[in-house]
Length: 115
Length: 113
Image (cartoon, rainbow over all chains, first blue to last red; front, side):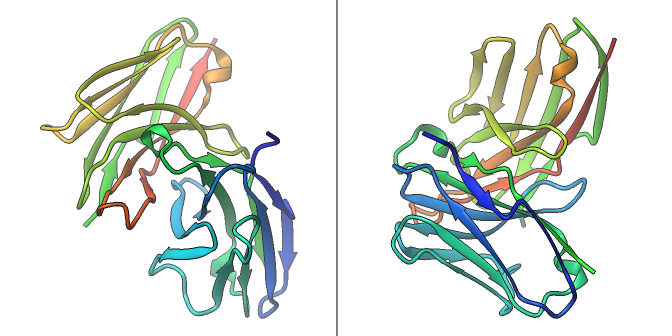
């Protein structure tokens, strides 16, 4: 068990460019989540997968954001035509269905800076 | 709407006891969790309460009162390494269709020597 891993850890991009983040969850976890966190705030839910099915999307997730989990393992989060307001830390988390209290395990996050 | 209220900052000295409160207003409720996050790091799970009462895990304890929509995290024998942000989080359960945690804005704990 190597934990949830995310890549890249840091990304600086120019406004208008596209960026993609990858998440590898804990191997036996079938649930995967994306959250966004800005300084001084708690993580905000973006989207949730159970296996390969995307079951919920937040209203925060505009049309420029898309997430996939094609084989029910790793996931990608793509942001198209980035804006300065997209600057944040993007956190991936995973959990196992049936785990007590829905304990979710976070990755170290991917920091995005849009300049 | 959904809201989880926490104090923004708490300061305490090494060896002391500190309590971080959380009040919540959510559409559904399926348990209160607590997470710790060091600066620049990942949130890490600390504790979970589904039922009223106190749960103890080492130096950390968490309490829940569902009738008051209130909970707290109690940290005893504070150490410098406990300086971090602490978040309460609620799972809203709509019969299993949604599984997300809603997080509070966090409490920044500063432990002083």
